[in-house]
Length: 313
Image (cartoon, rainbow, N blue to C red):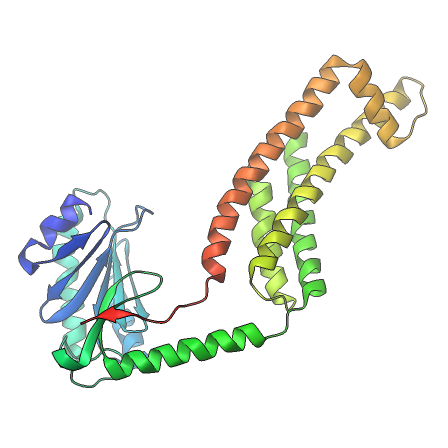
């Protein structure tokens, strides 16, 4: 955890585990998460509010027009990302933003840590537990009944997802469109001398977006299909580009060979062409693999299904 965040929260008795911390501010259970994005820490205030009240909270914070500050809601309360121009200036920024947060919560009469943020019932030590949220790893105290309700909803949603049909053929069409769009970008960039990860990133994200839009279910099949299709289509695009260049060169020299025969001829008889071709293929493969790695890591997070809450007293 960043030392400036720790300094800002020193009076509130926070405890820390890596990039996460828990404590209480003005009677509210608060989790602070310092993500690796560098945008700034996120503060999660656990409280029982309706969605309309959460929306009001967001509007109240936005009305202050704080720079690099973004309010939002989550299942068990509200959250505020507090960014600052530099890590050192965070402490001053936090002193400006925190009063606005507490004021907004007070105006909404947001219940504090003695009230379950899921059910709105009074929390008792013997009938509650601290659970760790699946994605953010924030620690939230809920009543035992609330944990049962949430887990029942999670189980039902996962069952509905598992039983939902998967239109693989339509999904593949979406992936293919994304791969072709990435291939066209790769070809255009190659023509002006650039090789980047953007082509593969475009392929993956557009392809998986269309995969879901066309009725495909976001699961492991989508990731494998997207990876293989993108690799094959981008590789073929580079080969066809060089084959076309080779065929044109053969024609200008008075020859009459087919597309791939021209490619083989130029590779065998022109050291410059051969070097350029294999270097371009190598660089594109490397950048595609980098882009695929980044994309797949993000996709794996996206398709993760929520797990049941487990906690401790």
